[in-house]
Length: 190
Image 1: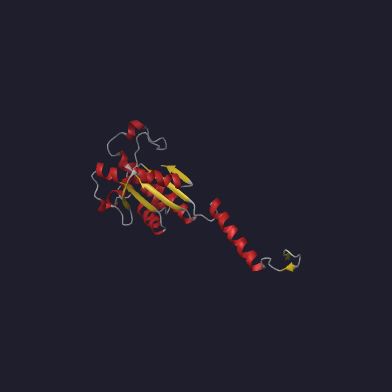
Image 2: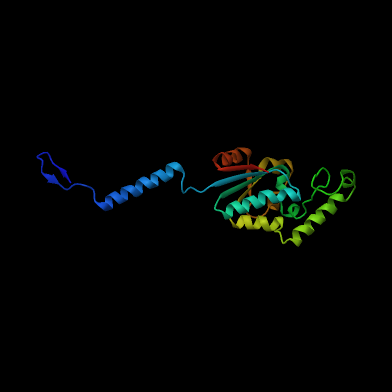
């Protein structure tokens, strides 16, 4: 209760419902100001198109999407091969200069060794029931991951935009990728 100018008691105090509504407004404003309840964002740049380098951006993207992140993966240079329907099914694993290959570089440089190491890795992937590159891409797209294809690289490599998986965003430039990274909570270069 409060008093008026004559000292008489008045009942102009806010009701409980009004106070509760005001608290709700203030909590919402605080959440907006601090970013609480905002969707977390992840931005990944994929630059390599070998079999072993296709997995990291795809696994990270699909896992982050499963945890509720808004995920964008910008593919540039050889990373575009991951988004290319035909090329993604024939990614290779280089045996030369790969420190994890149990093959000496002198032997790894022989003709056909990349095909051998790729076949061995594909067998290991199948034996362990690991998702293929195509399966990871399709799953990620279904989960809302945005896969972007660098327009400069499309032009440079003379790719046809129709050869990319359905759902891939084409015509994206470096400026758009940088803006996306600046807004992201997590930025990765793979």
